[in-house]
Image (tube, rainbow, N blue to C red; front, side, top):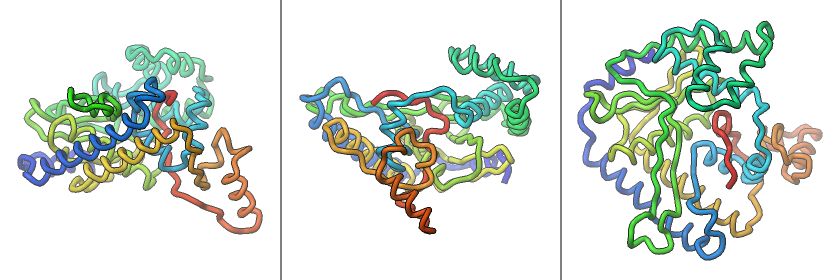
Length: 325
């Protein structure tokens, strides 16, 4: 199904049902309980850690392997082509939506980032060899973004930053301002004041993977918390033109439980609990793999002819800028 056909199927969707609104209310309750626990754990010990921020990337990393999540926060690097090309695709989508087709991938991506204040990525992009393999890769991504045509009546917005702080009320006690859910929605369409239902699209630069569903559901939760009702549609879009619409019903509450679990786990790490290690394909690019027992077990199993897998693979950090805990 193409993007326009999918949007057409959502255009006449009725106002959110009472059950959908109740789901959002329950999601808020779940996150409020988590905020109270986080505040109770940390307010008297490491208040500088508050509010704990749960982003799409942080939730994905913590779910994949807490050890790798911590290692990556302590080893931030901008020299990562997979990350840069993912951000470049976001820039190409922005350029296509607001300025038309991309003429010069390197220059146009850099210009978008400079307008956004992202000077580091802009400088890295402008330093790329004009005829190298990476330039050809960027040209393919730019062409793909050019095929993502959105009817302007849907009022498209790109890289929309959304966040909600929990436990901020006067009666919140220890949980006051203890937890913040945040994210940057790649492509947000419609919503209040536009005459269209709210729709969120996760733009991915790689191949389809099951972890992308959880990332898109994080968007659904953010939209629901912002608007008071779940979005009419949520989907993942890939450069080959594939659009994967996802089931919205139940997604908000599922994502809220996931975010709450991640928040409590983060608080436990701040308290000093050792990270839970889960081996898998992600060990291949973990900054701490050399001294990690889980990675060593995986390598040993591989040498013995087994898979050694000990957890689900996730790529939640492919397009997030990592921040310290």
